[in-house]
Length: 381
Ligand code: SF4
Ligand code: SF4
Image 1 (cartoon, helix red, strand yellow):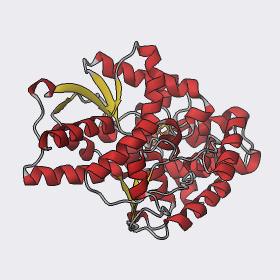
Image 2: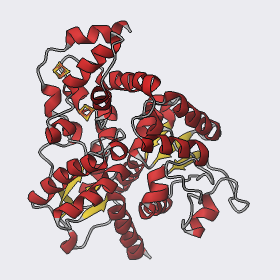
Image 3: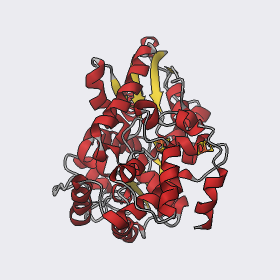
């Protein structure tokens, strides 16, 4: 608690954090400075108003403020601490948070979906990869983890990542029964229930040396809240490694002239850039695929959030979409032909935001990679 007391004296009210905060830039409310003042009250054990409690949860946990802070105040750690304190005092912020937590604990996913996560996965891949299948000859010690968004909301993206790894010759397994990583619950402040989800996963992960994460949300939670963080890799790192190998061997195929230099905007996932510095991998792949990247004014480590994460889609979906709409507009106004991203939260939010922005093309980076690989394989057959 000493460290938390100390931070107040370190804040110099320079407002650098506000310039990096999508929520503040969109609403002119819920600034990181306001949050710090509320945390100060919590530390003094003073009662908060409902509005103050809510303000702590009006945050995408994008780490923009923390990255911008010249005083290096551990803002995310403080927000997580405050969310937990508020949860212990008053419980969930909304009925939806309670339902989602119950669903994860009972069904293993926030949507309460009782069907298999693997519904619709191409059978030839299932036969080879699923752990526990009588037809799978060996068990790779590398596990591909989809996450709930890919399993239940973005199944095309799920199948694209499966096919990409398969085509690239990566040896991997998939689980018949994957559980939610617990990130959704953690962000409600209910850390005790999040631990239940963590324990379930740890049991399943025991037999694997490497976990490849297809979701940036699962990835950050695994890296920060699970033991043995080196075990977790993001899929874009694996794909980038393979592309670099092709480049070294000189076997990377050349695109048709008409497909070269298509200008796109690429939206970084906050969960990959600021905490882990993953900015080069997607750009290297895009450049290898001959796209021209039209960078956002704020990109890479300085990128602005899509608006979806940190629990905002659950607490206030309208605000999440409003923030996402700003990003889509920015991409459209830049003259790009499409907006590409690799994070299921971002793409899901952008797709809804896009109704506001007259059908601008929103795409998944994985879809582009897969169509390129398919053309390559067709050309060498
Ligand atoms: S950037 Fe850091 S020091 Fe500056 S106002 Fe924000 S929290 Fe305070
Ligand atoms: S983590 Fe992101 S959304 Fe939350 S206060 Fe900081 S900049 Fe704003």
